[in-house]
Length: 353
Image (tube, rainbow, N blue to C red; front, top):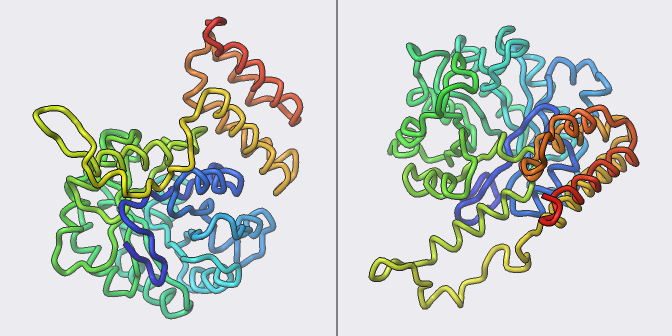
């Protein structure tokens, strides 16, 4: 699988761009644990053109997280083109156009998934951005505005004709927001369209290693993008990659799974990692906190990190976790947040449960 000159290998897993989630510390950890591609938080084109400090700060990337994409959104043609030029100066590997965000403050103003109600403008913006920059341009969008306007099969061809080099499809309409289930059959239809030659990246409801493997095998997508399942769980990429690698190199004989004779000669993409313990995972979350504080500042670094901590699945074994979660979300210093994590470590020990 390839975007521009970037080679991703087989069955790559991407980290989805998410507001207030995909900060630099989180991206770097996801990359370490196997994400083939990471994206910044999405960036408002109009705010970027106006040089709003908080928006410009989102363009900060590290060499350690490459390949990395910066995603922009907006509804004004000139602002989107100018923002793309500004983003290019930050030297990401790709620029992604957000035509899929369903939240009211974005889509309700005609940007993000709101573009699904104005396809001519979406296509014009895409064409002009592609012309304006030299790095690969990609798009992320949804199936359509609502169930009566499912347009993705035709739209995919139109976007490809505009010159994009990959397309990510979330398997819901805008009206669904994040309710119901993602419809991967339509993503598969786009991928299997003989006219489509760009990579198709599937997104929506990928929460487990088994679901990630099924997305590749059943629907034939070139890559799988993982979003909400990564909250407080950057190691999910390691778990998914190891499972896919093991299953793809296992043959079924006499109803029992046995490793194929060729497996021992194949290098595991994560062979240097040993299984992660609970202690390991808490140390990783503490490291995320340290990275964000060092890269941003203590106040904003904590704000970025504590949402991940409060959402992490590793704390589900703590009785009455609600009060601990509230304490996490209220912590204002690194010392306070670290102390809460260390208390959780003690409470999760087998002899404490």
